[in-house]
Amino acid sequence: MRTYLGHLAVERGLAANTLSSYRRDLRRYASVQDGRGRTAIGEITEDDVRAFLVGLREGDADHPPLSAGSAARALVAVRGLHRFALREGLAAADPAHDVKPPTPPRRLPKAISLADVERLLAAAAGPAGTARGLRDRALLELLYGSGARISEAVGLDVDDLDLRDGFARVAGKGGKARVVPIGDYAREAVDAYLVRARPELAGAGRGGPALFLNARGGRLSRQGAWMVLRAAADRAQLSEVSPHTLRHSFATHLLDGGADVRVVQELLGHASVTTTQVYTLVTVQLLREVYATSHPRART
Image 1 (cartoon, one colour):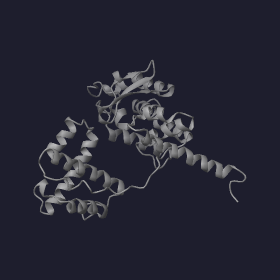
Image 2: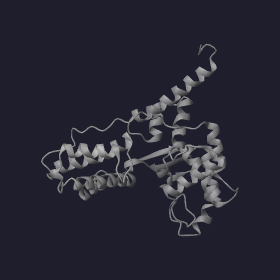
Image 3: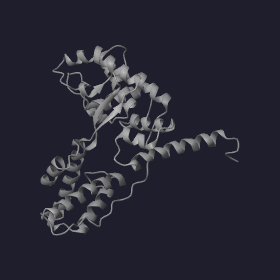
Image 4: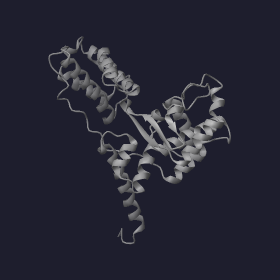
């Protein structure tokens, strides 16, 4: 398993968060197979793989039942491991080849309205004028203004920004870099943070190249950014706000405004337009709701 994870990290260039998920899923898989008396990967059968998948869905004393999507993700890791073992001569067959993942129900991305976005951004600053408040407002303005993932935003360095021309270079999934625009509101918020807040936060530590700093002067973590978002949502009295909420809202609002789906695909860094097209379902759903509540003959 260690060799396979090294292959994913070095040759495939998977992101650290993806590698962490693979490692967790494969450790559970190895533990289950050990319990079934499979001490070598070449001893595992198709029935063993199917039993593991059933166990994921049913749960056990140490693990809650997984959703179809989470179980499918774990099976992807298992199937990759067995393909690698076959290719490297560590096993004579691939027992996971014919094991199909469960089909998760299609869930539409959760976006919030523009009015709610504005409430959230206004609440982000907290006490006016504080270094943390300026940082938090800049972070959330950047997330909504660029559509970047939280991991991409906290991974930014100061040199990745061009505030004069209004863009940032972010490192997406698999280390793929892309350029994203930054709107005027985000540019103003980030500029205020850089001038009035970041020097104060950097004074608590070395600072380094990171754009967003924590209270100790180091790089703000994904967990720290999530806490910033959660605190702002609580102050704005908004529920069901997740780390992806502003990204989903960014995409949905662009499409509502008439943006081409392929442009939105590029802005989000999706490898396939199919991934982006799920947002078009959100906008169609909104049209149906508006029609149903507004047209005099929409309902009998």
